[in-house]
Image (tube, rainbow, N blue to C red; front, side, top):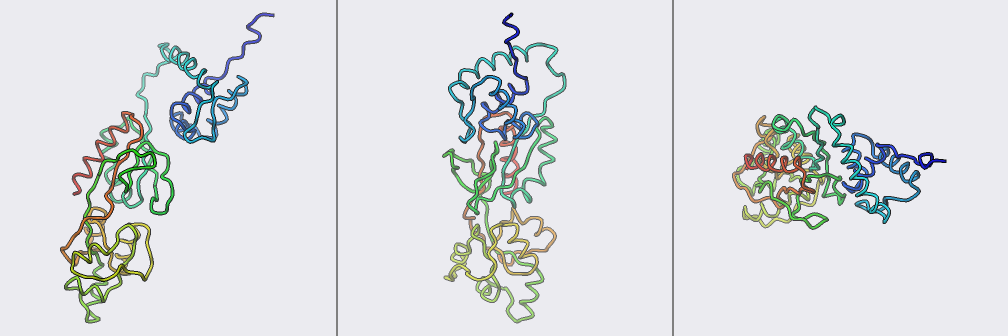
Length: 300
């Protein structure tokens, strides 16, 4: 019996799934790179491991960890894949699309990022973006992404962040609420007149710094609905539910259509600047980081 009868080749899909997962550190990122689901990547790797008779990855670890067999197998596999990729008939003439996952807080994504995205896609048609929403003030981990926009100068991995926007905050109110206060004989003419108006609460933008800058020693508002989202706070203000402490950069749509107005000129620095974390060093991530930094600079 010849040795060829004992030779079983694994599928190319299984080999590529293992290489991508080992390189990117997660089944989800490997799935994005291969344009399949994470479950498909896991199944392909399992089929490969069953054929080889060894375990290649420890899936319980975050990021994924190679076993001893996986560490030995990976460089051999990469050499084989490189040889296959070098064959001219295997090379595609069309331009490859590179995927880039971006995580951002909801209001920043809706009011700053999404309206400007056509400019990025026009300049970089070879990059396909996937935009994910993060909710850091609910103590939830940000979605796994190569580029992360947040409100912290350091992330869980300890990497330093770039400051995107040094925002200012100032009170914002709907014309309808202004008129209602006027009819009640309590118009908003100066900051102290806010004692007659409901102040909308959010842990992201505390009132105390602005109140102190206005010469008011009031405590932080403790009554009324608490919004853990800047966009919801501004929307509530536009509906006449109270006065919001908002960032003009995020409230530009409401300010332009006059559903919100600024009753006072006084502004103070926001408690948390928007920051940029880039995980990895892909050309797509670098291009996006340069673009979003330049875009945010125009908004300040």
